[in-house]
Image (cartoon, rainbow, N blue to C red; front, top):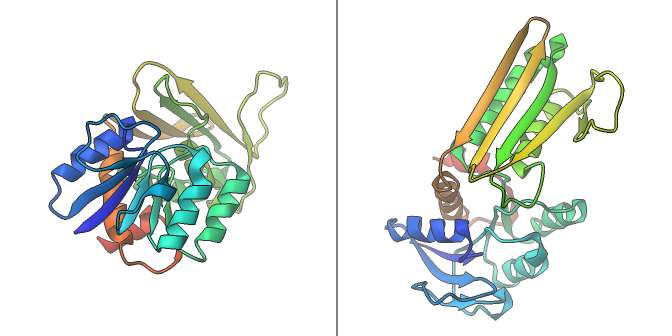
Length: 253
């Protein structure tokens, strides 16, 4: 049994994960963290993780970058591994996460779905063939109108996968409205669409002369991310300090 603290328990993903865990005989949410307790959870809810006195095997965080300091401090102090699913971290916070991984087990992923993490490997392989032959690379992501950050963390992770495969030679371009010049061969464009209730769509486009290859992923419900997060928490239980990602979870299954 994996005992989980759900950070952001009353948000959309927190509620989704609560429902998933209720049907999982190998996991249990023993406490929640949220600014408001709606009184509808079967576990105690704390407004600040530093006040949580419930023993657990892992933390899942689907909340806000604002609580990263207290989240990592709690993880280190209590020896509880943490699964970071939140996006929108600053460069300083990303460095903070890497430093914390030297003292506690941290699994960070911009996207928890099996499909997206497989896609990251596929676009790396494609880049080595297509981008190497001069294909332009563009990424278009679409999300619901309540999403705060743009481009999405998943879009950036996909861009990083392509860039890594090509020796980090690309410059990321997010807005061309102020440019009046031809596209540079060493730029990688990222575009964001926000509207309606789109759960998440990502297209990685390799555009060459007279042909286009597009890799697409569509999520039709938040459950795909929630299932991945629960799998990650189970994987992280008992792990020693270190930096982990969804590729480690996939490899362990």
